Image (cartoon, rainbow, N blue to C red; front, top):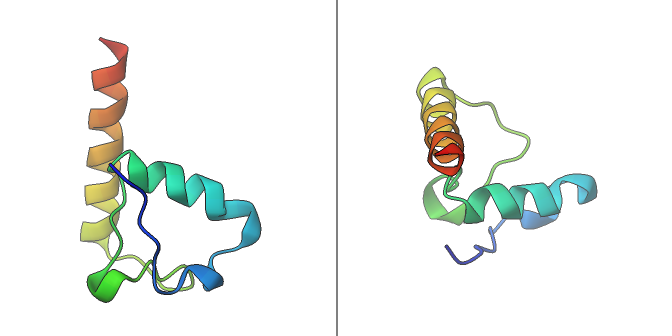
Length: 64
C-alpha cells in the first residue's frame, strides 16, 4: 500500500508519525471518513476489533 497523508496529520505526535505510516501502509489502519486519522479521538469496540483482526492476519501471514 502507498502511504496516505491524513488531513489531520499535524495532530499526530512526532514520535508516532513513522509508526502510523508503517501500520497504515501494512493495511492495519486506514483512517476514518474524510481522510482523518483522529489521533486524539476514541476508538469504538468495532474499530479496535477490526485493527486487531488485521494485525493478527498480518502477523500470521508473515509467520508462515
